[in-house]
Length: 172
Length: 154
Image (tube, rainbow over all chains, first blue to last red; front, top):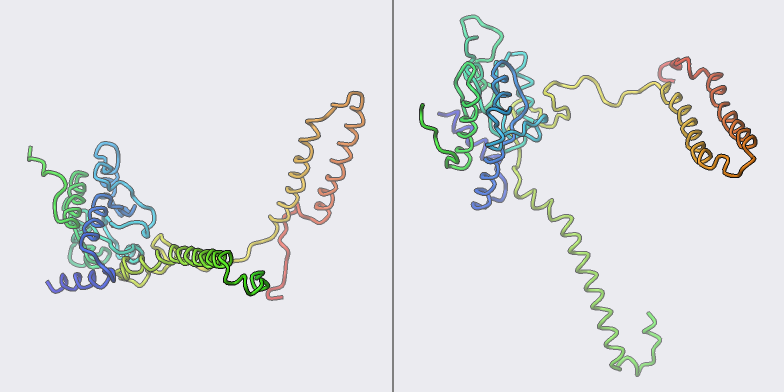
């Protein structure tokens, strides 16, 4: 709980000097409808992320297909895979280089908690990306299906705008 | 400034006041356009400063790092390259110019009938003179692709 308030304070520290409510609403609507993820795959979840971007699942339908090769142009980091302790500094550097406002999606069990790599005495894997920086959306699965990633992005849109843009599909 | 040499009576004439009005009106236009241009150039900076996020959340203090691949850069970008390639490139430039001048010659070649031999000889002379570049560069050892050995910090 304390960590959460801390994050809120951090976000507040980054907010613009001048804010207009209507302008902020419009900006968040624009941001939600065109989230630019960072091209960034760490492990097998990245394969599912690529599938989500490709023709069959077509992330472009939701405006989030512009995977940016540079963190300075991206606003969503999809942490897709296992974070080694060796990779963690690079991930943190990329997070630092993303300009505000920025969001993080932890995709898959490894990014959420370390997944199957957690056992007594393990020394190589960071047990969850939230150990490095705050996470907005968690997508469980090992790996999650592309639909799950799309749902995660829709959840992030919901977090930005306060309402859901697409209907919840009925369970089949 | 020619206004000042007008006779005193002319100062109060209608003609003069109208001209003076136009003069100041033009100045005001000039001033307004300058201010508008300045505002147009500087305004966005101010607006962006007010509306943009003040800073970005930072975990490893790498926000300002120029390289964007996540890995710390090794060494500096301002390193010294060998000049060997550039000498070679200069020889290429000589022959690029050669071709450049041969194209118009080829267009008018033999346009004046009966001087084919003369045209050909002139072309050969031109190419021969430029070919001295090769001889010169060869003599200088450009094609050996040797790096000049210089003592450090000399």
